[in-house]
Length: 320
Image 1 (tube, rainbow, N blue to C red):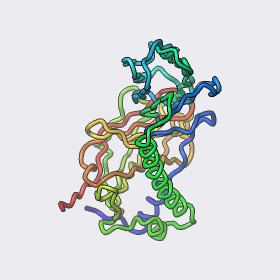
Image 2: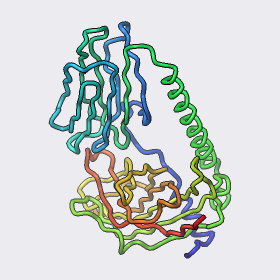
Image 3: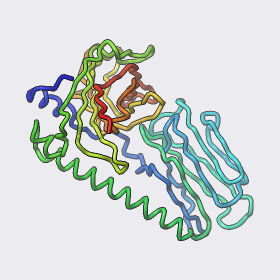
Image 4: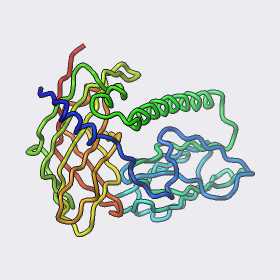
């Protein structure tokens, strides 16, 4: 397994520095875990914002029997509903930043008799479960919420420490040391130009591709070894307008999606030009083996997505 020289390592660190994904300012802060909403008679009448994303299900669970559900543009959703629950799966027909109103009326006639949600199409995230109650939550429910808040706080602290290290001005080997990423395995790379296939219908074509793997020496809460992965591509813009990355997802062999730590390019890719684009993710070492699909989407491109199949990474699983 080849190991990069310090000079190549420095180039990789510069390439892999996460850049904040661009998103419209009107997007609400998304809650990815379980979200609890308590309704009461004194609540204002405005709709409650909930993030959705094409292809990802968002479920609503109520403590009362549902009566009527009104959904704008219902034909653009797969809708699964029963007496106490509602699951919405948006289709690709939705546009980033678009707002869709859904109104739910309860059958028992108690106050409040209905609730409205404003579904906001997010470029990468979606609320997965929204629990709605019209009565005080149980102690168990509060404990669940407290545990989730503690887990999210720990994740925020980890993200904060990582961002502080990445913004501290350290680069090269010192930058990796500051981030706690200097594991025993070093950095391995793999030329995957012949592996990666640009799907028909793409605006972007992959001209060259290389994957990198960094053993961090860290473990997750389950005791699994964590690795950093980077896909670096030279992409050509075959379209008629400049292309700037807005987000990415790495799709695993079983269809699981992994959000990136960052997406990088030096500048927008002008029509007919090529530029380097890097996507960095983190995952358990045991999940690295297999063939992945990289999905990218750009700013001002609506719901247009770019797919690159055949992405593989250097793999060096160590049995324990």
